Image 1 (cartoon, rainbow over the protein chains, first blue to last red):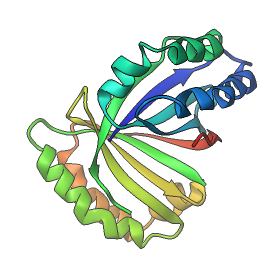
Image 2: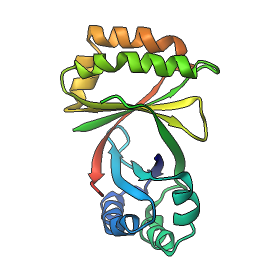
Image 3: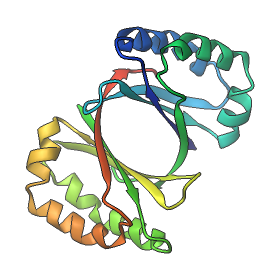
Image 4: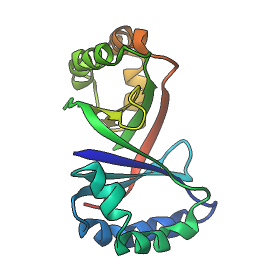
Length: 99
Length: 99
């Protein structure tokens, strides 16, 4: 299992609209192959900065299947207009489980 | 509930030692007031980059109580020698629950 962490800075004043757009897009992720979980976190120190966190079964479920899907086009149509800059996307794997 | 996201770049070659040190430090977090969960994620694109993710009841549980505790000193003694640079710490709150 891998985690996609997308750091997204939104245009000033578009925070509420962006959050509503992400909420609307939840079913797109839920219906995607290999998508296990998603949530949106908002920075306390920089309130225009968000982190979309999505858990995928495999890296390819995100980078190949999802990005090549109609769902991705719909996702970008919903949230893209609010981006202040291109999202910075990284993938991670759990190294220490903790608790 | 808030999430602490600490981006940590480690010295080349110290990855295994760093992960073992974080594993050893799990009980320090577990015993800390208001600490709900912690895990360590490792970047796939930049394998020397980690993200420590810790859930706290309140911001102050991290920034005041934990940072002022003996546990924090022990944590830093364990992991600090492996840092390539000072960690970049941010706090977030959930904006969209997702699934």
